[in-house]
Length: 88
Image (cartoon, rainbow, N blue to C red; front, side):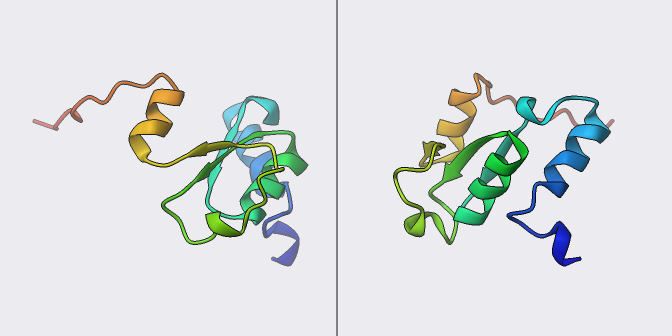
């Protein structure tokens, strides 16, 4: 519904409820100003990715991580890339 569309925080609030965490523990990864506004409305952190469609229209003044590649995002999250385990 329209009430559930970004920049409404409802989707992030529902995700937090399902995960059993506060919205402050979430990271919204998106490519548009609507993604960042939804994160801020929910009290979540935000990461703006540069490989999406809307990142060029986001003002520099909005508080968000700005990442250029998936590898940069993983590094920021302190993730190591590892091959996926295959089902045998």
